Length: 375
Image (cartoon, rainbow, N blue to C red; front, side, top):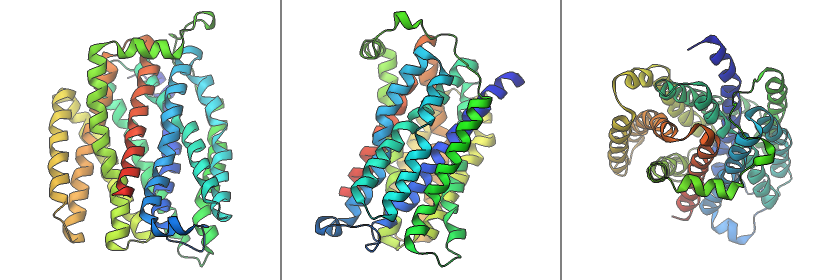
């Protein structure tokens, strides 16, 4: 792969890192924060249903992404990747800062609204998928989709670990829980400047603005293709299983083992490290020797077995190795799902299809979060 392609993709990996850095901080905070009754102003209903509230809060960020991914993916096909990305990134610094202000002022419903808006603008990670398909041939896509998950994993290592040095200081609750979001607001502003200066356009396939196809009509064109529809259904089932795991285990660790923010941060960072290491070498080797369909089906089976056996783990000494094993199988599975879908999609519809796929990811995440909270 030429240095020019790597140079074009590098800013997108940075975007992915920052997008998931905010999400990882939210995942670490939102399960424990509802138990801080002196911080959020909860009414009697929410005080009696704190675990349900945890699931709802963790699901609102992906709810915003459901909307954002489709709109941003379609717009990037029509107007180009670069201008669409920059426009979406303008909102992020404001929304992250607003989340911190909502928590510090104890405004639960304002927090809910800000989480949705932040997810809306972070739907721009679908552009990263589209840029990979623009620039990388089909034989190398699985490897570059794997690199995308390295950026995600690094975010899930750095984000949660922000809370550990904060715990060394005797900070008031409102500052302890809000500082990472203020930091994310500042970093998002810096990221916007870097992307504006460094990112190059990757797509030459968007149509003239005088001949745009309506988003709804283009969606119908995509869903009328049987192979694409089958692949999207398969991906959706896989994502529901995976997101159910990722969304539930933080809630479970807080409820069943009384994990505080620091312990939960360490566990999330450990699982993210497994994801990152797998994508740094293992996935590239597997991609050279096995077809993505074979890898996807075998890893899904292993994830299913891991989830079933995890239900019998009642002690941390047996539960944590099972969490690590499941995470490793997920690290193998996810790039395969992206690759199989991308290989079947026409060049002119990559942004749209990757937007739909990302919407399925976040819809599964939102559904899993709220369902786990209710259960």
